[in-house]
Image (spheres, rainbow, N blue to C red):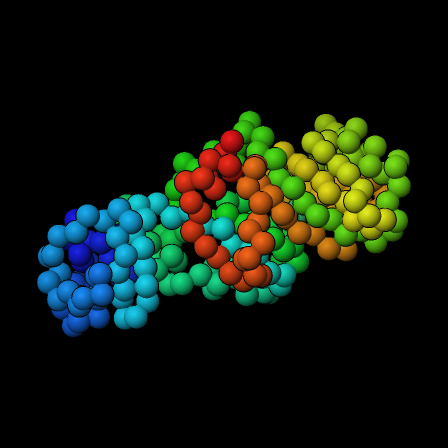
Length: 240
Ligand code: URA
């Protein structure tokens, strides 16, 4: 693939901008400046740098972000900064069928929820993960206001009725791991589901953190606000 196309596919700007960056000596491949925009490279896994930013070519982008509290999962946030401001520009500008599209969050977490958020530019993956039929388990660490009771845990497991659906929603797993700490596994993703389930069970969520999606845990070395690429092994763990 031509070097200007390599940069273009990764979100470094229009083809013209990418060619300019190369011709002006801002692009290095294998530690050498390349000024020929038409130079041919095998893109898969290619390591290069653009204006000092190191990058590795990925056909599709799959990322994990440790979402901090006080951020919105929206491109056009109303009150809090967008999670997308935590990502480098190229990830927000990757082209999709000729238009700037960038990566998208796979589902949303509330402004005050922390933890594991997946992002990708693979629409099929988003669709598959969000499909109610897929039943990907998501594990939440829930800090609650009132001491947990056995009856509350049993109600969450048996199913509680939320205001938008007469059918009860059940936790796939639910374990009190402390007086105020519940580990809850859900396979659906309804709006404010954890908070509404806890309210229906007679308690109240004080803090909410997503620790796991499928078989993939939030990496312990990923600080709030940090992101990293997912490996093929991570993706296999997520989709089962
Ligand atoms: N359930 C909620 O109530 N909030 C979230 O952010 C995620 C699940």
